Image (cartoon, rainbow, N blue to C red; front, top):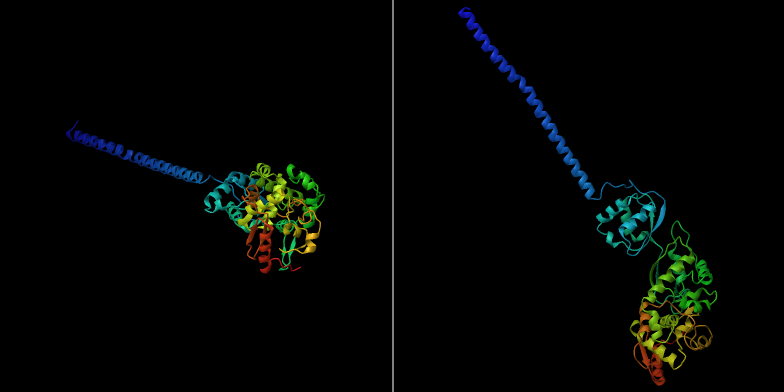
Length: 408
């Protein structure tokens, strides 16, 4: 081989090595870029998964993905009860069953996010069906949506009475219940229907306790036979119920309130039956300012023990359509089941709804020998006396202040 050929071969051989080296070097570059792209895609996928998991975790921690109605509620109206002490879970289930909200979870979440949800009051509420959960919470916090609420004042009677001095009419329990049941989509329960239920319904069905049934039954079909068995205060009624069901709810709740004072044992201690104690408490309610309740209780017991007629003007007034503090000789001479000027002992029934304070006063009478008392001024000041001479002097003071003047 010539020298030039050998040189050319080495040169070519050297060139081939460089070309192969370059080929190897150039051949690996695409594979490096492919690996970098794959790594980038994998990192992006991982980050996306992390983000999705984070969002899911956030939603889950806030109550999960919940079903809720969209838009403005336009469903039919329904009435839902919020019971005293009910839990959010129980209430939410009730709202779902009534078709108000779509899911329990949506309502509970909305309630937890509303800072006023703890202010929700017991009662009956008129709500649209198919409402958004947050709107349902707001609607339940709005007292204007509450229906069937009746506020019975202390000393209320079942029948309406007219006040002689002002000609004002004091609404009775029947009227108050009737007004409370008036709902836009529901006819009011009439006074007549309530009176019929009170006078004719089975006493056990009306919730009258055994310790009161004989006395109540003795009044026959008189609608006022339930007098005194409904406590003053705020009561919640379902406007959709029957008159009998409404009265039964009121009587049962009230009897529990009375019995919770220790009525059964206390009545025995003061020598009265439970029904007689409530009757006496109704006299206290109508005859005395709050601060003298226990003193009037003592006068009642002292006069019953003597025995002496009670001679309370409130018992004369009970059966009169027009009411005032004073009574006339003619009024006091009328023989009724309540007039304690014309009969011995207590009235046959309570004459009003006594407060729990009046019940407790009768259960815990003050110590004293008083047999008389009279209101001596128009601010309600009451003078208690042991002797008739003392009482006559107090009566003179009362007359001079115009308290005993009749406007009939």
